[in-house]
Image (cartoon, rainbow, N blue to C red):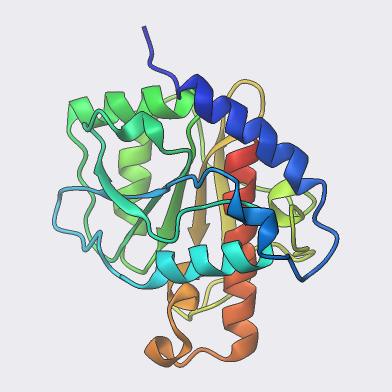
Length: 234
């Protein structure tokens, strides 16, 4: 039997859906978050040699932005999780990034499939050099499902902030246009969102790390908030 996310998180996700309807101002009072349970997200630790830990400050910066600019109650720090961990199903959002090889064992492939089909969400963020490896591993997880480009009118581009042209370009890799790719379940829910040729994590980092302009960093953080909101409400 496939494992599913806990019922308590299902309740929290419904709460977040209601909360998302209240996103009508840029400023969010501190009291609005104070009594809400803090949901914890996690970075995926994987094998194969890729630097799964890259952009170390990216998730804390994103979570800080989400806490200050939305009504989502998220913990200020992300945890690290291996796909074989019993804690895997406690996280509504997983983040996977890096520059090199990704290699998932058969047990990791099976656990990730169970997690995603049970309601979980994986955000893969291309940090350059990841593409060929992650596509191969995702094909092991879902051999009968394809990565497809997500249309610009999809809710993930319109949850809190609007991106009429889709995924923003944050960091230059190979001169290609950024693409938001996804794998959906039978109901049409995005289980895997792959931000390709964008490098959102670089944009989430403090501005001094990658010398990103304020406009690019703001776009990256806003897109990250949209992805996180979608993960917690679908």
